[in-house]
Image 1 (cartoon, one colour):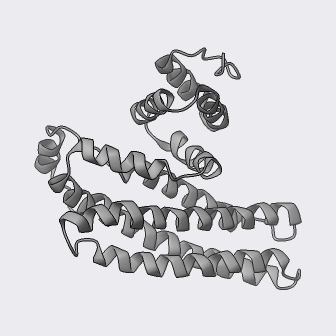
Image 2 (cartoon, rainbow, N blue to C red):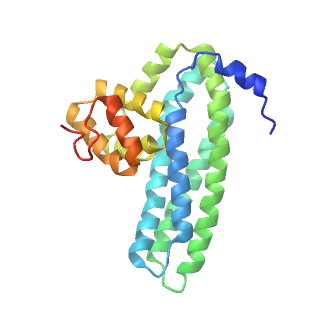
Length: 243
């Protein structure tokens, strides 16, 4: 792929639009990459390590299914309301991905319960199939971030997109939100992380907000935590986010 520097300069001069895909897709990319690496290096003779790796595969599949359903209900509905047919190709992908997640989830559970003799082969097969799933999702997310965003930005104001985003967030249970925060916030850039947490802090009950911060802090480098704490007006000392 050729990168057109002049086009990039033109895009940089445009006021950024609200991106409903950007944050969650960073979370999914991080979760997928970490899970693939964890499965690839796991010692199948170490039962606790294998249990942790297969649990991570299952957790990833559960989040992917939930994410697909959120997109179908909120983003595809918004796209189809003002650009009928524009989400059809990706909707087909979603059906394939949901079937693939079910297969990978079942394979992870089977690996956990397999005999010692079968574990190496089953683990290798799951690793390879997960790699295909990750590759397909990376391509899929690129289409959403480019083609789907173009449709949304041409037909909705940022205020309208924010309403869609808030309605989607309101349907996510706390346990799922904790998983999303764990994989999203450490992998945003500092400006994105601060902006997202400032918004969350203005909307969430303070105990829940500080619990989110404490859940994410161990996954941030010391420098990143200190920078975030300063931006939020919190003590940068670990463990004092709730003070």
